[in-house]
Every structure is written in structure tokens, then in C-alpha cells.
Image (cartoon, rainbow, N blue to C red; front, side):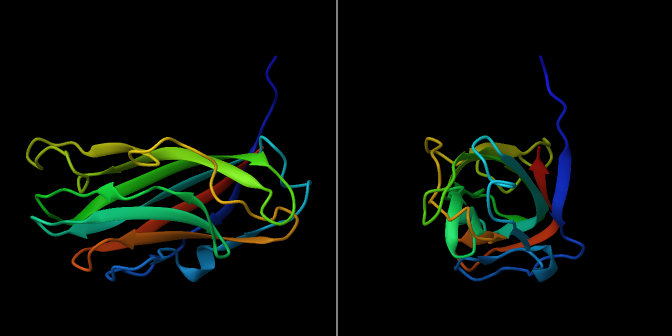
Length: 187
């Protein structure tokens, strides 16, 4: 028999995040969209789920577009890594992207005992293999990209955790701007 569950929005982006152009990991969220998750068993338990949805615009250069990479961090700890996503060699300018991720708490505890497993999709015309713009359509990739899903780095579920979404591009010739973001608690 099913059970009644609820969805609790934890954080949203009311403004755009910074336009990221450097070949270095940086937060793509506006500061106000970062939220702190509470500690302890009232929030964290095995099976607890979080859902992250984000979208915006991305540009990459033709010929050598490099890669895109998203990671979810609790403070300085990377709890999910999309792995490098191959970008479109045709080059794209200010095309849309969307990432949807589901996280499930596998373990809880102090130190680095708590873990999440995350999986999802990244959709964009800027992804390698996307059809030409006149044909319509986007590339859709399962995340983590080109690797088997596994729990991320451990974190301490007995202390508050600041949630942040980071983006890294392998070359400083493209850009990414986040326009929309939603982090939800599924209960």
C-alpha cells in the first residue's frame, strides 16, 4: 500500500547566477539561493531524497568546445559529480540547458559517514551529438556522465550543511549562466 508524501521547496533562485567564463570550478548559484540543510535524524535518514532542478544558458566554441561539469557541494565536500560532459563541436551561443538530479541518502552519521547517491539528466543543444539547430532537438545525457553511478564523498549528517551547485568548464572559451534553480526535499 502506498503512503502519502510531500514536497518541500528548500531553495530557489530569484535572480541569475554569475556568468562563469573561467576554466575553474565556481558556484553557479546566486548567493541567496544557497541554503543550509539541518543536522540530525529529524532531517537525514537512509532513504531521504532531495531533488535539484536547474536551467540557464550556455555557450561553447566551435572546433574545441571542451567539457561542462556540475557538482553538488555540502560546504567544501563534493557529494555529487556529473563528471565531464562532452560539448558540441559545432559551437553554440547562449543556448538553453537543464539539469535534473535526484539524490537518495544511503547512510548517515558523523565525520564522513553520511553518503548520497545521485543520478539525473543534462539536456542542451550544447551537448555533443545534438542535432543541428534547423533539425531541432537537444542532446540528453544521463548523469553521472559516461560512468557508473556510485555514492559521492561522505559528509557529516550531524552538522548543518551549506548546499551549493558548482560548474566547471574545461576551457575558458565558453560561458554558463544559471537562470532558474529549485532544491526540493521529498518526504
